[in-house]
Length: 77
Image (cartoon, rainbow, N blue to C red; front, side):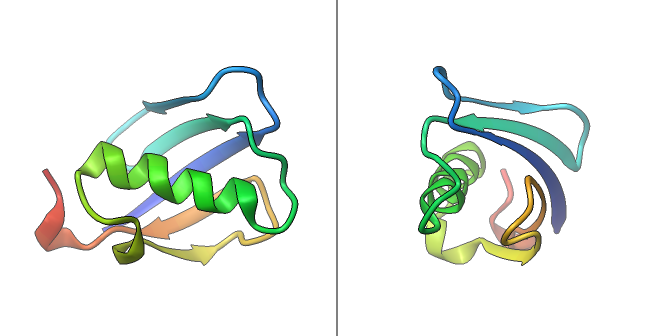
């Protein structure tokens, strides 16, 4: 399953919320440097879908706040 995540990096409070079935918004404390924000987003998505962060892949948007992630269908809650 592909999901779209809009990321706000360098925020004071972290959050991960569902806007629709496949659209989410994430705020993370980490800055968009050295892949730190991407790593934290993967952790938040993994926690939300109750999967390991290694099973989620960034398909599009490694250097952009708008990302498309792949979450394995068989592992969705």
